[in-house]
Image 1 (tube, rainbow, N blue to C red):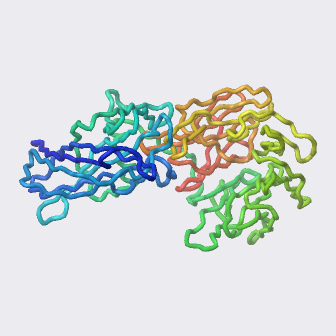
Image 2 (cartoon, rainbow, N blue to C red):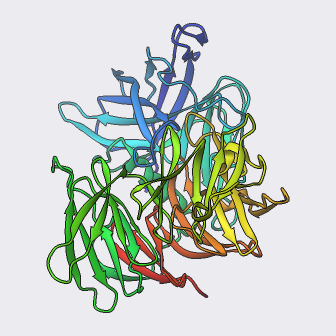
Image 3 (cartoon, rainbow, N blue to C red):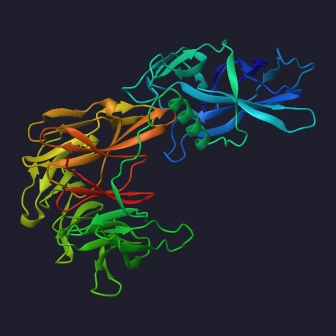
Length: 530
Protein backbone atom coordinates (compact mmCIF):
# COMPACT_ATOMS: atom_id res chain seq x y z
CA UNK A 1 0.00 0.00 0.00
CA UNK A 2 1.29 3.45 -0.89
CA UNK A 3 1.18 5.61 2.21
CA UNK A 4 -0.39 8.98 1.44
CA UNK A 5 -0.45 12.02 3.62
CA UNK A 6 -1.63 15.56 3.44
CA UNK A 7 -0.89 18.34 5.84
CA UNK A 8 -2.90 20.86 7.76
CA UNK A 9 -1.67 23.89 9.65
CA UNK A 10 -3.68 24.98 12.69
CA UNK A 11 -3.11 28.38 14.25
CA UNK A 12 -4.52 28.20 17.79
CA UNK A 13 -4.67 31.75 19.11
CA UNK A 14 -6.13 32.69 22.47
CA UNK A 15 -5.54 36.44 22.17
CA UNK A 16 -3.13 38.92 20.73
CA UNK A 17 -1.23 39.09 24.01
CA UNK A 18 -0.83 36.63 26.85
CA UNK A 19 -2.08 37.35 30.34
CA UNK A 20 -5.02 36.96 32.73
CA UNK A 21 -8.40 38.42 31.79
CA UNK A 22 -10.96 39.99 34.12
CA UNK A 23 -12.04 36.55 35.36
CA UNK A 24 -8.51 35.46 36.13
CA UNK A 25 -8.42 32.91 33.29
CA UNK A 26 -5.25 32.86 31.25
CA UNK A 27 -5.24 33.90 27.62
CA UNK A 28 -2.52 32.00 25.87
CA UNK A 29 -0.54 33.23 22.87
CA UNK A 30 -1.01 31.84 19.37
CA UNK A 31 0.46 28.52 18.29
CA UNK A 32 0.75 26.70 14.98
CA UNK A 33 0.06 22.96 14.98
CA UNK A 34 1.08 20.82 12.02
CA UNK A 35 -0.75 17.58 11.29
CA UNK A 36 -0.39 14.89 8.65
CA UNK A 37 -3.24 12.48 7.86
CA UNK A 38 -2.33 8.81 7.57
CA UNK A 39 -3.93 7.08 4.55
CA UNK A 40 -6.57 9.67 3.69
CA UNK A 41 -9.36 8.80 1.23
CA UNK A 42 -8.27 8.55 -2.39
CA UNK A 43 -11.31 10.63 -3.46
CA UNK A 44 -11.33 14.39 -3.76
CA UNK A 45 -11.37 16.28 -0.44
CA UNK A 46 -13.29 19.56 -0.45
CA UNK A 47 -12.60 20.84 3.07
CA UNK A 48 -11.35 19.96 6.52
CA UNK A 49 -12.93 20.80 9.87
CA UNK A 50 -10.78 20.95 13.00
CA UNK A 51 -11.89 20.97 16.65
CA UNK A 52 -9.72 22.00 19.58
CA UNK A 53 -11.38 21.19 22.91
CA UNK A 54 -10.21 21.81 26.43
CA UNK A 55 -10.24 18.67 28.57
CA UNK A 56 -10.87 19.34 32.23
CA UNK A 57 -8.33 17.29 34.17
CA UNK A 58 -9.70 18.19 37.58
CA UNK A 59 -12.62 19.37 39.72
CA UNK A 60 -14.93 16.61 38.50
CA UNK A 61 -16.39 13.51 40.08
CA UNK A 62 -14.98 10.15 39.11
CA UNK A 63 -18.09 9.25 37.12
CA UNK A 64 -17.94 12.36 34.93
CA UNK A 65 -14.21 12.77 34.55
CA UNK A 66 -12.67 13.36 32.10
CA UNK A 67 -14.93 15.93 30.54
CA UNK A 68 -14.43 17.65 27.20
CA UNK A 69 -15.28 21.26 27.84
CA UNK A 70 -16.51 23.96 25.50
CA UNK A 71 -15.21 23.91 21.95
CA UNK A 72 -12.45 26.45 21.76
CA UNK A 73 -11.99 26.13 18.03
CA UNK A 74 -14.28 24.84 15.33
CA UNK A 75 -13.93 26.14 11.83
CA UNK A 76 -14.19 24.83 8.32
CA UNK A 77 -11.95 26.13 5.58
CA UNK A 78 -11.79 25.48 1.88
CA UNK A 79 -8.56 25.66 0.00
CA UNK A 80 -8.04 25.38 -3.71
CA UNK A 81 -6.52 23.56 -5.22
CA UNK A 82 -6.34 20.57 -2.87
CA UNK A 83 -3.26 18.49 -3.51
CA UNK A 84 -3.50 15.14 -1.73
CA UNK A 85 0.23 14.84 -1.17
CA UNK A 86 0.71 18.31 0.26
CA UNK A 87 -2.45 19.97 1.54
CA UNK A 88 -2.03 22.99 3.74
CA UNK A 89 -4.90 24.92 5.30
CA UNK A 90 -4.50 27.69 7.82
CA UNK A 91 -6.94 28.01 10.76
CA UNK A 92 -7.36 30.83 13.23
CA UNK A 93 -9.16 30.31 16.55
CA UNK A 94 -10.82 33.13 18.45
CA UNK A 95 -11.42 31.35 21.75
CA UNK A 96 -9.37 31.40 24.92
CA UNK A 97 -8.66 29.29 27.99
CA UNK A 98 -12.15 28.76 29.39
CA UNK A 99 -11.19 26.83 32.52
CA UNK A 100 -8.77 27.74 35.31
CA UNK A 101 -5.88 25.30 35.77
CA UNK A 102 -5.86 22.29 38.09
CA UNK A 103 -4.82 23.34 41.59
CA UNK A 104 -1.81 25.50 42.27
CA UNK A 105 1.17 23.24 42.86
CA UNK A 106 4.31 21.83 41.33
CA UNK A 107 2.49 18.94 39.62
CA UNK A 108 -0.02 20.62 37.33
CA UNK A 109 -0.88 24.00 38.75
CA UNK A 110 -0.07 25.79 35.49
CA UNK A 111 -1.23 23.21 32.94
CA UNK A 112 -4.22 23.11 30.62
CA UNK A 113 -5.01 20.18 28.35
CA UNK A 114 -6.55 20.14 24.88
CA UNK A 115 -7.50 17.48 22.39
CA UNK A 116 -7.40 18.08 18.66
CA UNK A 117 -9.30 16.19 15.97
CA UNK A 118 -10.50 16.71 12.43
CA UNK A 119 -12.99 15.52 9.83
CA UNK A 120 -12.62 15.65 6.06
CA UNK A 121 -15.37 16.51 3.59
CA UNK A 122 -15.97 15.55 -0.04
CA UNK A 123 -17.79 17.78 -2.52
CA UNK A 124 -21.56 17.50 -1.97
CA UNK A 125 -21.17 14.75 0.65
CA UNK A 126 -20.99 14.60 4.47
CA UNK A 127 -17.64 14.19 6.13
CA UNK A 128 -15.80 11.04 5.17
CA UNK A 129 -14.13 10.23 8.45
CA UNK A 130 -12.84 11.31 11.82
CA UNK A 131 -9.09 11.64 12.41
CA UNK A 132 -7.17 12.28 15.62
CA UNK A 133 -3.62 11.82 16.92
CA UNK A 134 -3.19 8.68 19.01
CA UNK A 135 -1.48 9.28 22.33
CA UNK A 136 -1.12 13.04 21.83
CA UNK A 137 -2.63 15.99 23.68
CA UNK A 138 -1.83 19.69 23.42
CA UNK A 139 -0.67 21.10 26.75
CA UNK A 140 -0.32 24.77 27.68
CA UNK A 141 1.93 25.69 30.63
CA UNK A 142 1.93 29.18 32.07
CA UNK A 143 5.33 28.36 33.56
CA UNK A 144 7.81 25.49 33.47
CA UNK A 145 6.04 22.61 35.22
CA UNK A 146 6.78 19.04 36.27
CA UNK A 147 3.76 16.83 35.65
CA UNK A 148 3.00 13.53 37.44
CA UNK A 149 -0.25 12.36 35.83
CA UNK A 150 -0.46 8.91 37.46
CA UNK A 151 0.29 9.89 41.03
CA UNK A 152 3.21 11.17 43.13
CA UNK A 153 5.20 7.96 42.62
CA UNK A 154 4.50 7.70 38.88
CA UNK A 155 6.47 8.90 35.85
CA UNK A 156 6.98 12.62 35.38
CA UNK A 157 7.09 14.94 32.38
CA UNK A 158 8.78 18.35 32.35
CA UNK A 159 6.86 20.94 30.35
CA UNK A 160 8.50 24.21 29.29
CA UNK A 161 6.51 27.44 29.40
CA UNK A 162 4.06 27.71 26.50
CA UNK A 163 2.53 25.03 24.27
CA UNK A 164 3.81 21.47 23.88
CA UNK A 165 2.57 18.14 22.64
CA UNK A 166 2.23 15.54 25.39
CA UNK A 167 3.36 12.42 23.50
CA UNK A 168 2.74 8.92 24.81
CA UNK A 169 4.10 5.93 22.94
CA UNK A 170 5.04 2.34 23.70
CA UNK A 171 8.39 2.12 25.45
CA UNK A 172 11.37 -0.01 24.44
CA UNK A 173 10.29 -2.72 26.91
CA UNK A 174 6.97 -4.57 26.67
CA UNK A 175 4.36 -3.30 29.09
CA UNK A 176 5.74 0.24 29.30
CA UNK A 177 4.09 3.45 28.08
CA UNK A 178 6.69 6.17 27.49
CA UNK A 179 5.71 9.78 28.00
CA UNK A 180 7.43 13.03 27.08
CA UNK A 181 6.85 16.61 26.00
CA UNK A 182 7.71 17.53 22.42
CA UNK A 183 7.68 20.81 20.55
CA UNK A 184 4.58 21.93 18.67
CA UNK A 185 6.81 22.34 15.63
CA UNK A 186 6.72 18.56 15.27
CA UNK A 187 4.26 17.29 12.67
CA UNK A 188 1.86 14.90 14.38
CA UNK A 189 0.19 12.09 12.47
CA UNK A 190 -3.61 11.87 12.62
CA UNK A 191 -5.21 8.43 12.28
CA UNK A 192 -8.68 7.39 11.21
CA UNK A 193 -11.11 6.63 14.06
CA UNK A 194 -14.73 5.39 13.95
CA UNK A 195 -17.16 8.16 13.12
CA UNK A 196 -19.57 7.43 15.98
CA UNK A 197 -17.19 7.95 18.89
CA UNK A 198 -18.74 10.44 21.36
CA UNK A 199 -16.65 13.32 22.63
CA UNK A 200 -16.94 12.41 26.31
CA UNK A 201 -15.48 10.18 29.00
CA UNK A 202 -16.28 6.98 27.10
CA UNK A 203 -14.23 8.07 24.10
CA UNK A 204 -11.20 9.06 26.17
CA UNK A 205 -11.49 5.92 28.32
CA UNK A 206 -11.52 3.77 25.18
CA UNK A 207 -8.65 5.70 23.60
CA UNK A 208 -6.53 5.41 26.75
CA UNK A 209 -7.31 1.70 27.16
CA UNK A 210 -6.42 1.00 23.53
CA UNK A 211 -3.10 2.80 23.92
CA UNK A 212 -2.23 1.03 27.17
CA UNK A 213 -3.14 -2.42 25.87
CA UNK A 214 -1.33 -1.83 22.54
CA UNK A 215 1.87 -1.42 24.57
CA UNK A 216 1.38 -4.80 26.21
CA UNK A 217 0.26 -3.44 29.57
CA UNK A 218 -2.06 -5.89 31.33
CA UNK A 219 -5.13 -4.37 32.92
CA UNK A 220 -6.00 -6.34 36.11
CA UNK A 221 -9.18 -8.39 35.85
CA UNK A 222 -11.91 -8.31 38.49
CA UNK A 223 -11.51 -10.84 41.30
CA UNK A 224 -14.51 -10.53 43.63
CA UNK A 225 -15.08 -14.09 44.81
CA UNK A 226 -18.22 -16.23 44.44
CA UNK A 227 -21.44 -14.55 43.36
CA UNK A 228 -24.43 -15.37 45.56
CA UNK A 229 -26.93 -12.92 44.03
CA UNK A 230 -27.40 -10.95 40.83
CA UNK A 231 -29.04 -8.11 42.80
CA UNK A 232 -27.32 -4.78 43.21
CA UNK A 233 -26.85 -3.39 46.72
CA UNK A 234 -26.15 0.14 47.92
CA UNK A 235 -25.30 -1.17 51.41
CA UNK A 236 -25.12 -4.59 53.04
CA UNK A 237 -24.41 -6.31 56.38
CA UNK A 238 -23.94 -9.88 57.55
CA UNK A 239 -26.54 -11.59 59.69
CA UNK A 240 -25.34 -12.38 63.22
CA UNK A 241 -25.06 -16.11 62.43
CA UNK A 242 -23.03 -15.49 59.25
CA UNK A 243 -25.46 -17.60 57.19
CA UNK A 244 -27.11 -14.77 55.25
CA UNK A 245 -26.76 -11.15 54.22
CA UNK A 246 -29.16 -8.21 54.56
CA UNK A 247 -28.96 -5.52 51.91
CA UNK A 248 -30.63 -2.47 50.41
CA UNK A 249 -30.84 -2.22 46.62
CA UNK A 250 -30.54 1.19 44.92
CA UNK A 251 -33.69 3.29 44.71
CA UNK A 252 -35.53 3.74 41.44
CA UNK A 253 -34.67 7.19 40.14
CA UNK A 254 -38.28 7.68 38.94
CA UNK A 255 -39.80 6.90 42.38
CA UNK A 256 -40.56 10.19 44.19
CA UNK A 257 -40.41 8.42 47.60
CA UNK A 258 -37.04 6.83 46.78
CA UNK A 259 -38.27 3.70 48.56
CA UNK A 260 -36.06 0.62 48.70
CA UNK A 261 -36.73 -2.92 49.82
CA UNK A 262 -34.83 -4.41 52.74
CA UNK A 263 -33.83 -7.86 51.47
CA UNK A 264 -32.16 -10.98 52.82
CA UNK A 265 -30.20 -13.55 50.81
CA UNK A 266 -29.10 -16.93 52.19
CA UNK A 267 -25.57 -18.01 51.32
CA UNK A 268 -26.42 -21.71 51.17
CA UNK A 269 -28.93 -21.54 48.32
CA UNK A 270 -29.03 -17.83 47.27
CA UNK A 271 -32.74 -17.67 48.19
CA UNK A 272 -33.83 -14.03 48.49
CA UNK A 273 -36.75 -12.54 50.41
CA UNK A 274 -37.96 -8.97 50.86
CA UNK A 275 -38.54 -7.99 54.49
CA UNK A 276 -39.73 -4.38 54.38
CA UNK A 277 -40.01 -1.28 52.18
CA UNK A 278 -38.27 1.84 53.50
CA UNK A 279 -38.74 5.37 52.10
CA UNK A 280 -35.33 6.82 51.30
CA UNK A 281 -33.73 3.75 52.85
CA UNK A 282 -29.98 4.01 53.34
CA UNK A 283 -27.14 3.10 55.70
CA UNK A 284 -27.95 -0.42 56.86
CA UNK A 285 -26.46 -1.32 60.31
CA UNK A 286 -26.56 -4.37 62.60
CA UNK A 287 -25.29 -5.14 66.13
CA UNK A 288 -23.72 -8.35 67.45
CA UNK A 289 -27.15 -9.65 68.54
CA UNK A 290 -28.58 -9.24 65.06
CA UNK A 291 -30.68 -6.10 65.60
CA UNK A 292 -31.03 -4.20 62.33
CA UNK A 293 -31.23 -0.45 61.85
CA UNK A 294 -31.71 1.51 58.65
CA UNK A 295 -31.78 5.21 57.86
CA UNK A 296 -34.99 6.64 56.45
CA UNK A 297 -36.17 10.11 55.40
CA UNK A 298 -35.64 11.88 58.73
CA UNK A 299 -34.86 9.26 61.36
CA UNK A 300 -33.08 6.05 62.06
CA UNK A 301 -35.48 3.08 61.97
CA UNK A 302 -35.23 -0.08 64.05
CA UNK A 303 -36.25 -3.16 62.08
CA UNK A 304 -38.43 -5.65 63.96
CA UNK A 305 -38.24 -8.96 62.12
CA UNK A 306 -41.26 -11.26 62.09
CA UNK A 307 -41.33 -15.07 61.98
CA UNK A 308 -43.56 -14.76 58.92
CA UNK A 309 -44.74 -11.79 56.93
CA UNK A 310 -43.12 -8.38 56.53
CA UNK A 311 -40.94 -6.76 59.17
CA UNK A 312 -42.12 -3.67 61.01
CA UNK A 313 -40.22 -0.41 61.42
CA UNK A 314 -39.93 1.60 64.63
CA UNK A 315 -38.66 5.17 64.43
CA UNK A 316 -35.78 6.08 66.74
CA UNK A 317 -35.62 9.82 67.54
CA UNK A 318 -32.07 10.26 66.28
CA UNK A 319 -30.79 11.34 62.84
CA UNK A 320 -30.73 8.76 60.06
CA UNK A 321 -26.92 8.84 59.97
CA UNK A 322 -26.45 7.97 63.67
CA UNK A 323 -23.73 5.33 64.11
CA UNK A 324 -24.54 2.14 66.03
CA UNK A 325 -22.07 0.73 68.57
CA UNK A 326 -21.11 -2.95 68.03
CA UNK A 327 -22.89 -4.08 71.21
CA UNK A 328 -26.07 -2.27 70.17
CA UNK A 329 -26.29 -0.21 73.38
CA UNK A 330 -25.40 3.21 71.97
CA UNK A 331 -25.95 5.45 68.96
CA UNK A 332 -23.58 8.34 68.23
CA UNK A 333 -24.80 11.36 66.29
CA UNK A 334 -23.94 15.02 65.89
CA UNK A 335 -26.35 17.87 66.54
CA UNK A 336 -24.25 20.90 67.43
CA UNK A 337 -22.45 18.60 69.88
CA UNK A 338 -21.59 14.90 69.80
CA UNK A 339 -24.46 12.94 71.39
CA UNK A 340 -24.35 9.39 72.74
CA UNK A 341 -27.87 7.94 72.75
CA UNK A 342 -28.78 5.14 75.17
CA UNK A 343 -30.89 2.69 73.15
CA UNK A 344 -32.60 1.05 76.15
CA UNK A 345 -33.29 4.29 78.04
CA UNK A 346 -34.30 6.10 74.80
CA UNK A 347 -32.42 9.18 75.95
CA UNK A 348 -29.03 10.78 75.63
CA UNK A 349 -26.39 9.15 77.81
CA UNK A 350 -24.03 12.10 77.43
CA UNK A 351 -23.09 14.96 75.13
CA UNK A 352 -19.53 15.88 74.24
CA UNK A 353 -17.89 18.95 72.76
CA UNK A 354 -16.22 17.04 69.98
CA UNK A 355 -16.61 15.20 66.67
CA UNK A 356 -17.18 11.48 66.19
CA UNK A 357 -14.37 9.32 64.83
CA UNK A 358 -15.25 5.66 65.50
CA UNK A 359 -16.55 3.00 67.84
CA UNK A 360 -14.10 0.42 69.15
CA UNK A 361 -14.86 -3.33 68.84
CA UNK A 362 -15.79 -3.30 72.55
CA UNK A 363 -18.05 -0.22 72.08
CA UNK A 364 -15.81 2.54 73.43
CA UNK A 365 -16.23 5.92 71.74
CA UNK A 366 -13.30 7.51 69.90
CA UNK A 367 -13.69 11.18 69.13
CA UNK A 368 -11.80 14.38 68.46
CA UNK A 369 -12.24 16.62 71.49
CA UNK A 370 -12.87 20.33 70.97
CA UNK A 371 -13.00 21.13 74.69
CA UNK A 372 -9.72 23.06 74.58
CA UNK A 373 -7.87 25.13 72.00
CA UNK A 374 -5.70 22.11 71.18
CA UNK A 375 -7.76 19.31 69.58
CA UNK A 376 -7.07 15.89 71.11
CA UNK A 377 -7.89 12.30 70.29
CA UNK A 378 -9.94 10.90 73.18
CA UNK A 379 -11.58 7.55 73.99
CA UNK A 380 -14.54 7.24 76.37
CA UNK A 381 -16.59 4.26 77.60
CA UNK A 382 -20.30 5.23 77.69
CA UNK A 383 -21.02 2.24 79.95
CA UNK A 384 -18.87 3.67 82.77
CA UNK A 385 -18.84 7.42 82.33
CA UNK A 386 -15.79 9.15 83.67
CA UNK A 387 -12.81 11.02 82.41
CA UNK A 388 -11.88 9.96 78.86
CA UNK A 389 -8.44 8.67 78.00
CA UNK A 390 -6.67 11.56 76.28
CA UNK A 391 -3.99 10.68 73.75
CA UNK A 392 -2.88 14.14 72.61
CA UNK A 393 -3.15 16.05 69.35
CA UNK A 394 -1.47 13.39 67.09
CA UNK A 395 -2.54 13.73 63.45
CA UNK A 396 -5.19 16.33 64.23
CA UNK A 397 -7.57 17.02 61.36
CA UNK A 398 -5.69 14.64 59.06
CA UNK A 399 -6.98 11.56 60.93
CA UNK A 400 -8.93 9.49 58.41
CA UNK A 401 -9.99 6.62 60.61
CA UNK A 402 -9.19 4.67 63.75
CA UNK A 403 -8.03 1.06 63.73
CA UNK A 404 -8.06 -1.18 66.79
CA UNK A 405 -5.31 -3.54 67.79
CA UNK A 406 -4.97 -5.63 70.95
CA UNK A 407 -2.76 -2.88 72.43
CA UNK A 408 -5.29 -0.12 71.72
CA UNK A 409 -6.16 2.34 68.94
CA UNK A 410 -4.05 3.22 65.92
CA UNK A 411 -4.64 6.29 63.77
CA UNK A 412 -4.52 5.83 60.02
CA UNK A 413 -3.94 8.40 57.32
CA UNK A 414 -2.66 8.72 53.76
CA UNK A 415 0.50 10.82 53.97
CA UNK A 416 1.27 11.59 50.31
CA UNK A 417 -0.29 14.44 48.32
CA UNK A 418 -1.27 14.57 44.69
CA UNK A 419 -2.32 17.77 43.02
CA UNK A 420 -4.37 16.84 39.94
CA UNK A 421 -7.08 14.67 41.50
CA UNK A 422 -9.37 17.68 41.84
CA UNK A 423 -9.32 21.45 41.74
CA UNK A 424 -8.38 21.64 45.41
CA UNK A 425 -5.16 19.67 45.79
CA UNK A 426 -5.56 16.03 46.83
CA UNK A 427 -3.94 16.30 50.24
CA UNK A 428 -3.12 13.13 52.17
CA UNK A 429 -4.62 10.76 49.63
CA UNK A 430 -1.81 8.36 48.55
CA UNK A 431 -0.16 5.65 50.62
CA UNK A 432 -0.98 4.65 54.20
CA UNK A 433 0.70 5.22 57.55
CA UNK A 434 -0.26 4.25 61.10
CA UNK A 435 0.42 6.12 64.31
CA UNK A 436 0.31 4.82 67.87
CA UNK A 437 -1.36 7.68 69.78
CA UNK A 438 0.13 6.44 73.06
CA UNK A 439 3.70 7.09 71.93
CA UNK A 440 3.32 9.21 68.79
CA UNK A 441 5.38 6.63 66.86
CA UNK A 442 4.52 6.38 63.17
CA UNK A 443 5.19 3.72 60.57
CA UNK A 444 4.57 3.68 56.85
CA UNK A 445 2.54 0.70 55.69
CA UNK A 446 2.02 1.58 52.01
CA UNK A 447 4.14 3.97 49.97
CA UNK A 448 2.81 6.26 47.25
CA UNK A 449 3.18 3.55 44.58
CA UNK A 450 0.27 1.67 46.20
CA UNK A 451 -2.05 4.30 44.78
CA UNK A 452 -4.81 6.52 46.06
CA UNK A 453 -6.10 5.08 49.33
CA UNK A 454 -9.66 5.11 50.66
CA UNK A 455 -10.14 3.41 54.00
CA UNK A 456 -13.26 1.24 54.02
CA UNK A 457 -15.99 2.63 56.25
CA UNK A 458 -17.21 -0.42 58.14
CA UNK A 459 -17.98 -1.51 61.71
CA UNK A 460 -14.76 -1.88 63.73
CA UNK A 461 -12.80 -5.13 63.73
CA UNK A 462 -9.87 -6.09 65.93
CA UNK A 463 -6.43 -6.47 64.41
CA UNK A 464 -6.91 -5.29 60.82
CA UNK A 465 -8.53 -2.76 58.53
CA UNK A 466 -9.59 -2.79 54.89
CA UNK A 467 -8.59 -0.16 52.34
CA UNK A 468 -9.25 0.38 48.63
CA UNK A 469 -6.08 1.23 46.69
CA UNK A 470 -6.62 2.81 43.27
CA UNK A 471 -4.01 2.78 40.50
CA UNK A 472 -4.58 4.14 37.00
CA UNK A 473 -2.75 3.36 33.77
CA UNK A 474 -4.35 6.02 31.57
CA UNK A 475 -4.59 9.79 31.78
CA UNK A 476 -7.64 11.56 33.22
CA UNK A 477 -8.17 8.79 35.81
CA UNK A 478 -8.89 6.20 33.13
CA UNK A 479 -8.01 2.50 32.88
CA UNK A 480 -8.11 2.32 36.68
CA UNK A 481 -8.09 -0.72 38.93
CA UNK A 482 -8.97 -0.95 42.62
CA UNK A 483 -7.37 -3.44 44.99
CA UNK A 484 -9.05 -4.22 48.29
CA UNK A 485 -6.21 -4.67 50.80
CA UNK A 486 -6.27 -6.24 54.26
CA UNK A 487 -3.85 -4.28 56.46
CA UNK A 488 -2.63 -6.14 59.54
CA UNK A 489 -2.35 -3.71 62.44
CA UNK A 490 0.17 -5.83 64.35
CA UNK A 491 2.93 -6.25 61.78
CA UNK A 492 1.83 -3.57 59.28
CA UNK A 493 1.67 -5.95 56.32
CA UNK A 494 -0.90 -5.45 53.57
CA UNK A 495 -2.13 -8.14 51.20
CA UNK A 496 -4.68 -8.00 48.37
CA UNK A 497 -8.08 -9.56 49.01
CA UNK A 498 -10.03 -8.57 45.88
CA UNK A 499 -9.65 -6.61 42.64
CA UNK A 500 -12.43 -4.47 41.15
CA UNK A 501 -13.08 -1.86 38.47
CA UNK A 502 -14.40 0.58 41.10
CA UNK A 503 -14.78 0.90 44.84
CA UNK A 504 -17.78 -1.10 46.06
CA UNK A 505 -19.57 -1.45 49.42
CA UNK A 506 -17.92 -4.09 51.62
CA UNK A 507 -19.11 -5.95 54.75
CA UNK A 508 -17.00 -8.15 57.08
CA UNK A 509 -18.51 -11.38 58.45
CA UNK A 510 -19.05 -11.74 62.24
CA UNK A 511 -16.12 -14.17 62.51
CA UNK A 512 -13.85 -11.82 60.47
CA UNK A 513 -13.14 -14.66 58.02
CA UNK A 514 -15.10 -13.49 54.96
CA UNK A 515 -16.19 -10.35 53.17
CA UNK A 516 -19.22 -9.53 51.06
CA UNK A 517 -18.80 -7.14 48.12
CA UNK A 518 -21.68 -5.37 46.37
CA UNK A 519 -20.82 -4.72 42.71
CA UNK A 520 -23.04 -3.70 39.77
CA UNK A 521 -23.02 -7.34 38.62
CA UNK A 522 -24.19 -8.78 41.93
CA UNK A 523 -23.25 -9.61 45.49
CA UNK A 524 -20.06 -11.65 46.01
CA UNK A 525 -18.53 -13.46 49.00
CA UNK A 526 -14.78 -13.98 49.38
CA UNK A 527 -12.47 -15.39 52.04
CA UNK A 528 -10.35 -12.97 54.06
CA UNK A 529 -7.87 -15.64 55.12
CA UNK A 530 -5.03 -16.98 52.99
